[in-house]
Length: 142
Image (cartoon, rainbow, N blue to C red; front, side, top):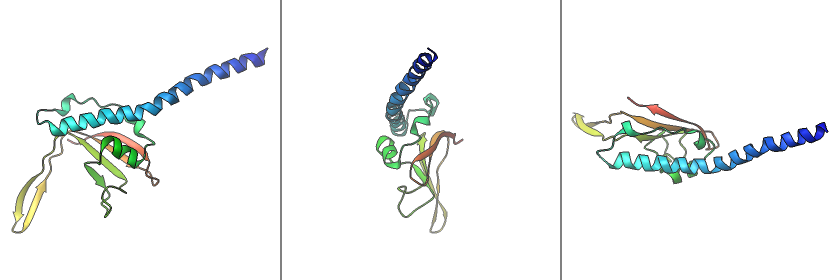
């Protein structure tokens, strides 16, 4: 009699985990779609404001590889460390969720200084050695 109760409890206990796993499969793509739309809106519309940006939980990005992130969100606005391969092998990608317009001025004859004002929220993604997202966070760059 006790074995039946344990079996029922075990079966009922695994059902929510399966539903959660199925939902988790869809969450990364939904999140990428939302981030992509917000990123495009902020960067393309001079009237857009980062104050209206809702900052969703970035946990669903953990476990994605570089190709998945790039296909869903595009290539990053900034990456580090610098590499001859560009951002392809960088361990940190950053997406700016604010308008940024570099300004250049002549610092000295033959030298140009470029200033990029940093003001607003950014998504910073860190990759493991295997190229998989192991950390994703909102960073306030004010």
